[in-house]
Image (cartoon, rainbow, N blue to C red):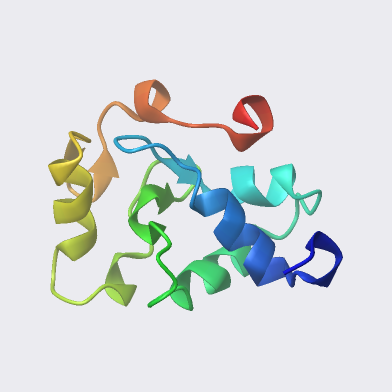
Length: 109
């Protein structure tokens, strides 16, 4: 698709696909990068609809490092298991070393 024909959700997916293995970002950081700083919730909706699009939605968490989207993954702890398989420490649905593993698309892209 040409960039001018991409929907907001498509743009979100393109950013999310660039989150490195073992790193996480937030809904708000993606929204800010896309020039829609007040649209973190829309980024969340996009992540919810990303199934089958080869998007690492498990790497997108809330601004405090909480796994707020975990209920949208199959299985009770799939989001946590995927993150832990990448070396991200999670305890009580909270990324433990959030500042260390945080990836900011505004700085990286």
